[in-house]
Amino acid sequence: MLLRRLIKIADCRLPFADQVARLRQQRQWLIDLEHLLDPSEQPDQLPLTSQGVAQTVDHYLTELLAQVATDTDEENQRVAAHINETFRSRWWGLFSCYDVEGLPRTNNDLERSGNEGCRPDFQ
Image (cartoon, rainbow, N blue to C red; front, side, top):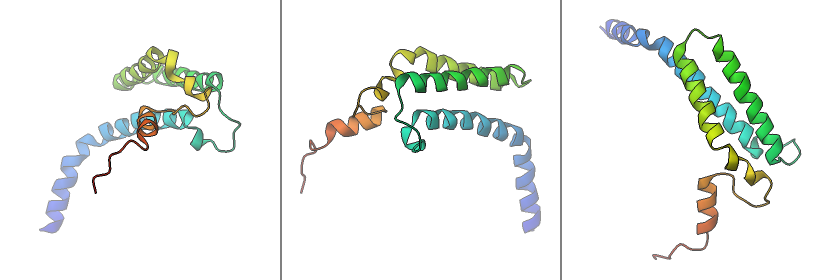
């Protein structure tokens, strides 16, 4: 009985295996970009500069687009193009945090740094 249920579950999941693999690959592209943008991921490097990070991200995006250009999966091509377009449309302000000491890298970090000491005490 249990074996039949497991087989039925496996049969239901099998058609989605390719989609899951594709989504994991696409998620990895975003994780790779996050690592390129995060100085804590590169502790043995010299301090990052906006120009250096921009060149690294540009290289990654160029390579990604070249890689998926030969891919027969049109969804991968669309997602890679969207990632590239999203980054490039924000390029003008994406890297300035690396040249200004103490400037938070993300919006979340910026909000946290601006709110320290401003929380009311509800005790």
